[in-house]
Figure 1 (cartoon, helix red, strand yellow):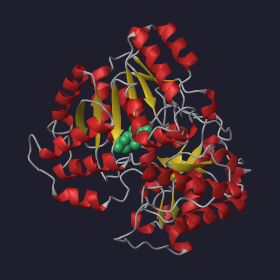
Figure 2 (cartoon, rainbow, N blue to C red):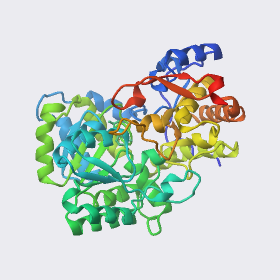
Figure 3 (cartoon, rainbow, N blue to C red):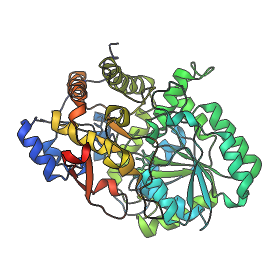
Length: 461
Ligand SMILES: *Cc1c(COP(=O)(O)O)cnc(C)c1O
């Protein structure tokens, strides 16, 4: 299927180059086979993440010049607050340097040690902040989410049965809040339906439990609702986003995703108590509550991005480009997570490299060999990202994925065709690809900084 043409044209370019195969091999070894440790200069097409890697619009670039850099009471904060009120519908906002800053403020405000935090699949930084605040994450996502090849429209949905069993067992007082990621990044960008959000909201309202929306890519979720949920096709994405937010007490936003900016985030809420607590913590960890660790110009660019992101043609093109890459890979027989997500195509590393056990780090290995093959940088989302549990052992996730993430408004379809070809070539010689093992491993969020080495061929019998 031919993707929708871009609803923009290019007026500034950034040169990139493909290193020779021998050089790529050397750079990969220098980076300890961890794509996070590669130099950007050595990457040809960078699909590590869509976080902070987006191209800003001319309107955003000019907004930078309007940034009010006052320490307190910045006009740019007021612009952002007005945009968040209009677009998300929450009256209170606390800006933070990025999404995890908001996670920190929320976790410290709403989790008491010993409490549980049910959510639809873990996210790396989110779960860590819950744990650092003394909470324990509990997965309540629907079972379909664990089956990469299963086609279902809303594989991000919360399983109400799992949630109510958990509340039944521990009592509502033991629940800090229910965290709903929409969409679910670690499941392959799978959306949550509006109907499911409504069910979760009603269930929690009836029991006095609060609901938090992780809105890192909520606009993509809103688009999938428009496309897939019965009765929603006539609603604009902007309207659906507000409907989603009406079913939560608070929302965490990494502005580096939907809002097209290079840095920024915020906590938005309708709960006055949370607002006051988070605003106070903000001055300790982020900066004054009217800049939250950001420059005034960043706030200004976020305010513009918040209004751009909900335009139907923008989001349709964005998700359409991801789908086109996924369709190409599917035609080549490459195993990917289905349905194709909104921010990237997720390779199913277990199916791609069936000769590797999970201890041989299939997703980490696949991401490494992909860079070596064609200079394309992807991200591991498997056992390395999942980390170790309190007992010090690996937390073996059911999904072992490699994410090819598309920054917004950055790459052309010709570049993505090159990516698909590279993945296709690698798939043809998959049987010869070795696994990796850890050489070094930091304590927290190990996927960012661990180093690896290829397993000797003998160990792969
Ligand atoms: C990116 C992300 C976060 C954290 O945001 P940062 O801006 O990277 O700190 C939280 N949740 C999800 C689902 C994300 O994708």
